[in-house]
Amino acid sequence: MPDLTKALRYRKPHVKKAFHRFTSYWLTDASFVLLFFILLFLVFVLPILIEYEYIGPVFVSVTFLFLFFTGIWSSREPTLIILTTTLFICQLTLRIIRFGPTSAEYYNVELFVGLANMVVFIFVNFRLLFRDNEVNLYRVFGAVNVYLLMAVLGAYVLELVHIYTGSSIEGSRPLTGTELDFPEYVYFSLVSLTTVGYGDIVAVNIVARMVAVFLSTVGILYPAVVIAKLVSSSK
Image (cartoon, rainbow, N blue to C red; front, side):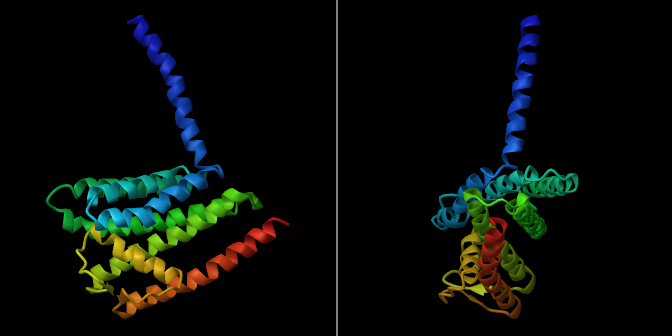
């Protein structure tokens, strides 16, 4: 028993130290690089895995939950920490509830919580991007991260539009009303954000069209504003 107590006492400081390193990491500029690769997977790889049925809705939810979990540690302000923690717990709870027979009933609520989570996550990362008026390579990754997060935010909004108006976008395949529609939404969102507009997927009602126009406007103005801000900060 004394040996077991000694071992537990020895392990406790190491666990605490590892936890502190994890939480502190998300406040450093280096965290932008890891987040960049997470978002590359989320925006460009995850839709392919969904389309070819290599993964299911649970994996998609876990990916987003991990993304929002990192947002809890991306601020030192108590208000933001409480807000991000509350939103994460709400989304996790809703995801667990949806394992049961009431999955469709709670999906809309989970989307709203996910949208709120994404808005807060973008806000937190935007603040991290311009903190201390410092410019370095990590901040460039951070600027790209916010851009990709805007594409995911657009996907959330378009899906909510579809749920509450009965339509939003139409393309090569019918929408299922589940997480498996994410490839269609994020593709259209990213195409609108970059102002490419291939035309293979189109907005079919006025709300979705205004979302597409908003994304296009952000896609034009965001790089100009960020470049101007970063250049002015470097002087």
